Image (cartoon, rainbow, N blue to C red):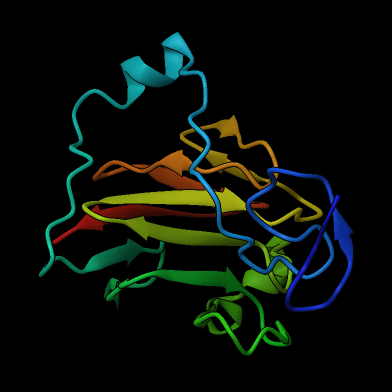
Length: 159
């Protein structure tokens, strides 16, 4: 067991995020077995994110994309995510609460020139191109991927 430096709760060895507060525990990135159908649906988009790239979230029914500059990581959720140590992007202005988004639902993490997504133990799960993510495991994102937080769906692009 390992103690979370943020909240002190005990967690299993090797996890990336605290199961109580979602704090990034550090360690080595977990490579996840690729599913054949996921590979086929993601073949078009690249996974390279240069230093000057920004990440665009295209949210349906909103004409302008949301631009995020991610240098380390950002948590996605609704107002009330109490973690002061990690940058937080509030999706409540986009009606996320009506679509089952948790207060601390998922995180986008940058490692060098790649971007990853991880579900933070959310109630209504996180999907990547229709495939459910295992909690607290990092999945490589590609330009044009579709992410669903509960029933709140958006596309992510690298610019």
